[in-house]
Image (cartoon, rainbow, N blue to C red; front, side, top):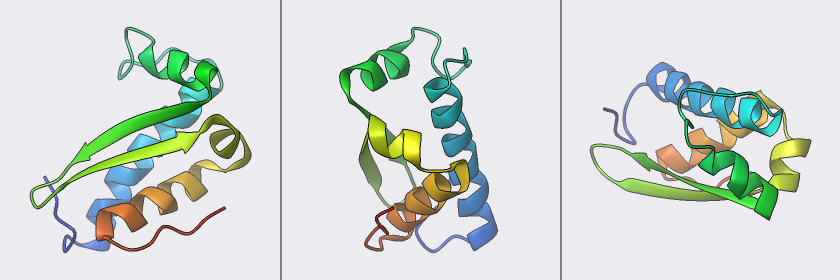
Length: 92
């Protein structure tokens, strides 16, 4: 597990993985992290809400489908990293 003070490479690795899953679901791909299709259903309703459990906090992030569609995988990863670090997320 990581904390908001973890090395940047560790937070980036975790955020990159989450962004990869989100974009895959957005493209309609089946992913092991969403076997019941709950993320895909949430995207169809207009937004997806997911949690990140860290040693020092639990973060809940809600992203509108339009934002996911319009933002690159790297942009989503950066957005997640900012939340993990406890910073105000950059709006894309």
